[in-house]
Length: 190
Ligand SMILES: C[S@@+](CC[C@H](N)C(=O)[O-])C[C@H]1O[C@@H](n2cnc3c(N)ncnc32)[C@H](O)[C@@H]1O
Image 1 (tube, rainbow, N blue to C red):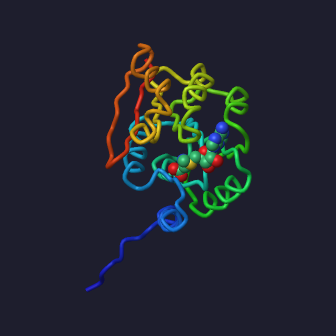
Image 2: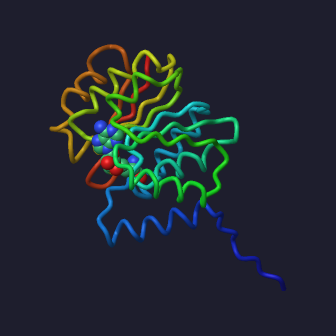
């Protein structure tokens, strides 16, 4: 009898390596549990043009990229050059279908220079700046675009202006999805 081992893709291997490193070095990656929901949202939205704020070493970009095809593009912004370089190496190794453009710089400066429209955004950088990122990106988000914000549970106090806006401005339909002790705020632009 021939038994076949499940084939794990290069992306899966890179994700597992980053998860191990993250545990050892306390890297604040989105992680596999919230990551599963993020990947489902990006897949459901059939996203073609994705904006990510906060690349770190590429974990969430790879997770999202795995759920997309080669017609998609991910633009991801990271303020620290060293992290952006490691992200570049990880993303190359992961060999995901979409094109990924890593921009090194402060998202507050970079977002106004980007060409939209985006149909998906993942916000996961400085918690007190989430509202600024969204305000700067808002005109570049297509109607129906999905915006996922990480740490809406543990850092809710630091992102209060953001959460008030997506929940109460009437411009988004927003829900909080709890995962363990934290959660994602998932908002659809109306
Ligand atoms: C929580 S980590 C991102 C984790 C990543 N999304 C993941 O799940 O693998 C936050 C990242 O945002 C970056 N960052 C913080 N403020 C930023 C800013 N204003 N512009 C761009 N990146 C920023 C930090 O350097 C850090 O690498």
